[in-house]
Image (cartoon, rainbow, N blue to C red; front, top):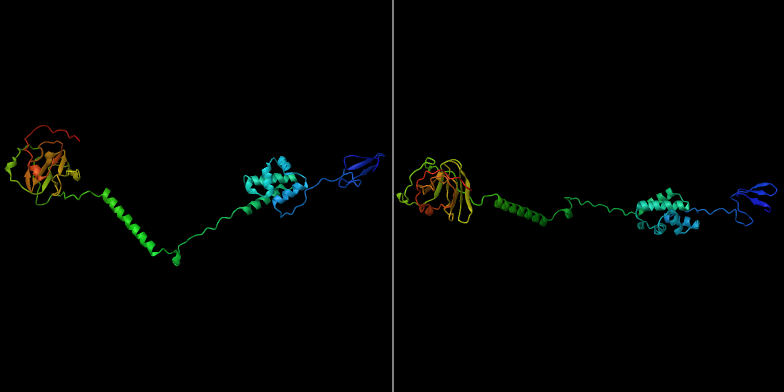
Length: 312
């Protein structure tokens, strides 16, 4: 319109003072383009993928991917991943949703709607867990019944474990040798002797030589003794009660005695008494106690000396 000045696009004022209202949505027929409306994002099918909706909205605005990256402050490689629908290239699920919402705001789409669509796509792409198969034992199913070979192998395994347990128990807890009875026989009463009484030693030739088992009898309570053979293998170790006896095994090789009370041990060979090992209290170790060694011991000289302290 000649002689007309434009104000803010909503109305025109003529030079003669007449005001003519102009619709802002109407395009100038003169082709000047001053009244052309700004481009809007086209409507995309709601069933389209998120990447397709974002790309169509960006192209409708005439923006490049780099411009979107600048506006959203999201790296260009993540923008490209969103447009390609490659969520695996993004740092994680929260980043994928956040980047998509920022992209949607930059191109004029609803960020909440886009975020929900991204969640659905991520949920659809997540691998489903494999179904769990429960192998339950069924008596009627021959395929799930153990074979006879498996049963025999299990039985043999149990037997081997029991045998190994028995060997272990006997090795560590059972005694190394079977000890003879320490109970004095009824027909062999312990010789009565007064403890610590000084008696003259009987000469070795005063009694005939006798062959038979060697037996030691305690004349007092709690007499500690240890019998062992020439290789150090223990035959018996305990505290003998008064009147309790121990017979040295006949098959023992070089049996020996260790005690601190030789004066309180009565000795017999084949039922015949022989002199004690000592007349006073003292420690005696590695004393041969076979019949021949006991007979060969020299006579004990009477002594009234004070008892010597026991030294271990």
